Length: 85
Image (cartoon, rainbow, N blue to C red):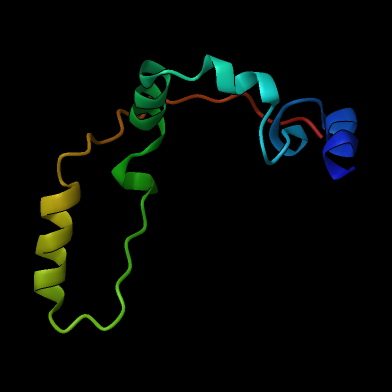
């Protein structure tokens, strides 16, 4: 019921987008779409890495850099349509 309420009140943007997505969107997914999403949305300036029970901060930082250091940095030219409520 909430999905229909949000869709009616806000359209299919921001709060109006159903949490589970739209059924027809699954058919549009491809490797290209997923890779483009990753390149557009997964950037170092939007990632938070945390660790529990870390014995050595330096080793943890080195491990994170070795695994995530190849992610390209943001070019700062990202623009999004402002949500209207």
